[in-house]
Image 1 (cartoon, rainbow, N blue to C red):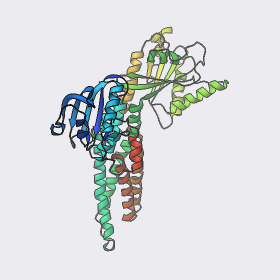
Image 2 (image 1 turned 90 degrees about the vertical axis):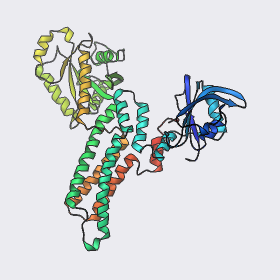
Image 3 (image 1 turned 30 degrees about the vertical axis):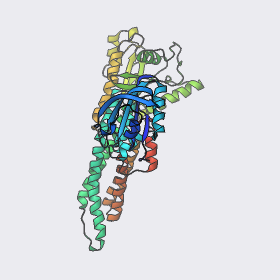
Image 4 (image 1 turned 180 degrees about the horizontal axis):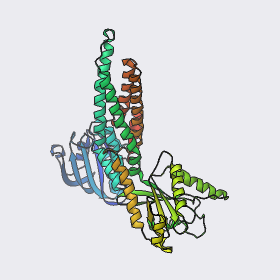
Length: 458
């Protein structure tokens, strides 16, 4: 309940130099004052820090710093205190237990941020961005989370809802005057608005592919014939012996994945079984998995031996890969490997004019910097082609998709001349799903599911 005062460890568990214990709620100041050596906390200004000791039955537990944040100018919107103590697990557990004995209770997962949402300090999409920010492990995922936490996504959604609400109210007004056959909502203006909102929501939906990749890592499938050097390349990119390297074709029979950061982006490299016809049942399963991975990749890196490929064969492979990708066409890089074994000038003449060919030697570590550069450029080109606001949350994607379906139904209804009550129903549905994004419309189950994924102290 919000009337409770909650407490929890706000820093990571384990031994450290400092631990921070956070309290939020109406009794925060009284609880801390009851065990703090310096008097008068209730009269101190907000956003001040005070040095003293935490005491239990006249015994000193620790020397601490107490940071005061008076509501509503705090993270949760309530009175908040953060106690910075030494990082001993014993010390912090004793202090937390002392606070509980004095009337606080342990916070549930995400309860501090849930209170911030309930008290209007954050909307729901911004609250979710807090969890994304904590989990960010690259410059790209950090930037996405910061943009969303600062309200870029929320502002767009709020603008869309406001404009739809205006027309929805006009249609509802028409229904009140049904017998007079009046029209308050101009149908041409409404159609133009629905088309505009549909286009904006569709752009946000389309951006999810980029946003999800930036948030969770860019999946790069390394494909090619057996013994093309895929495992050697993976080991070089990861700077470790992750995959078995052998002259025997078909050594890699399953998918091997690992991650590496390049220029602030996390790439998930996926070393796959060689693509070829085979009678070996186990190897055939690996080849099938390779083809499945290609369809779900963000980038496909096809590795080929420049000394054994003809121009015609490479073009045929490129076309086959494009066909395998289907409508979900993803960037393709053709990696001409083993350039250290032949005449590179002659090789480049052979494949001249074929786009996206990079010449490398995985074994000799030649050309890999250029390959890394190309990988980053492929991702950034995708990002630059999308709008400023990028959707990276699967819940947001689902709500936007449902809102878009309702908008399309509304447009179809307008074209078919249906009555205002049905149009109003479609607009209300769109407003409902847009409201789910930022929390104007919520359920206890939804909030519980979202905030249960947070750490306890957040």
